[in-house]
Length: 178
Image (tube, rainbow, N blue to C red; front, side):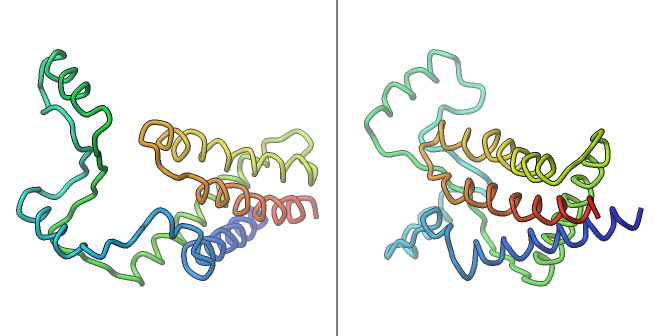
């Protein structure tokens, strides 16, 4: 049990540090959060026209008929579109977010340790490659799939999946085979 707790704790710390580097120091996600010099004007218009929530524009109204949805879809081809996450009042707590982030990373580490403990003969390379595979499955099923449908840049998420889960796999491959 202590091997799982220590393994999960260090794996969580490795993921947490990688995420800090990825989102902060190295800033590989900068391309997914661009700046607009018109942001104040845009936010004013959004605030006057949207309730908090997630939007894909243009989109037919909820409950619209298939024909109405098709008309909106056809009329939007070749025109601007947007995905918007909108909130009226930005709340931000670095401490709370970091605690939640580390707790999630620790849980991921514990789950990986549990999964690898179920392997018949978990050697270093099988743990390393399995960890990277798990990261890639997460990337492919969420980030990449969203980029297919919404033409977004998912390369930073691919880097996070490979580097983060690769580093965790290196640690766990060594730790669980001691």
